Image 1 (cartoon, rainbow, N blue to C red):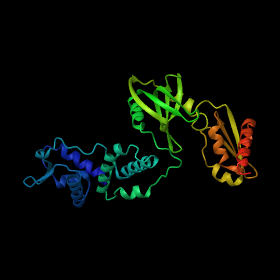
Image 2: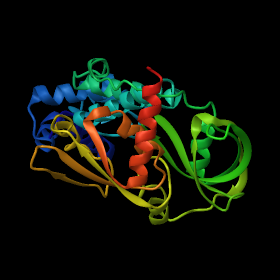
Image 3: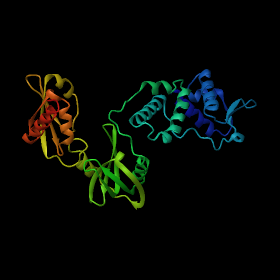
Image 4: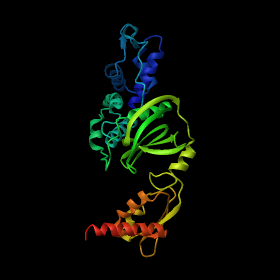
Length: 322
């Protein structure tokens, strides 16, 4: 067993014992040497604050009731060293995704994890220093992110004031939060809108007010959410209306062939080394932006309507440099 498992086993033995347990019995039960047992005792008593004492008369170890043995428990989260390191990596991920987001909630957990990792002489500082996930084009999350997340988990409706960028208008909605989505560096809330009687996606950074309500949120089945939000391309919801056929040059194909643009995409290498990618889409706006970034390295083969839009956009861009 590893060091964490041994500490936990030692704790369990002492909690269950009616009288002091000798070192010999502990070594047998823990299948370890005397030196290893002493390290576990030191970790449990000195690092984890257990009321562990030694009875010289009986020659054994016990939990001292005068030091609060009945109330003492090991940390509620008990993981091995690799699992604790993974938790710290997740913490790093959340910090990098949105600086300050959930920091106050996670800080106590992070401190406890680092304390436990020190028992293994691993420490958390090096991991946090060496793992970075820099955000690109990320917008600061709304000050109401915590309120939205709380309503989501408590399954409560909320009344929001929302500013939509596309129409540049402000509306008030009562919504039932369904899912929080982190997409391309930004947070979105999938929700049932009670005014529109339908599913909608809201950019969290555009929420201007958020007031929780006592009414229970309406629950939408996961399959219905996936069918509405996850079948078309990108963040725009709705069922696919068409399939884009994109042909990438051999140079761009080295990257695109390994990328996942959509769960239902179809890709094929062509004889000249180019790569053809087929993607179902509904609203073309995000797809157009992704195609444009490849410039001359991609051609829209079909449908003709999407090809025409790309031609117009490229001509408009060229006019800027005339």
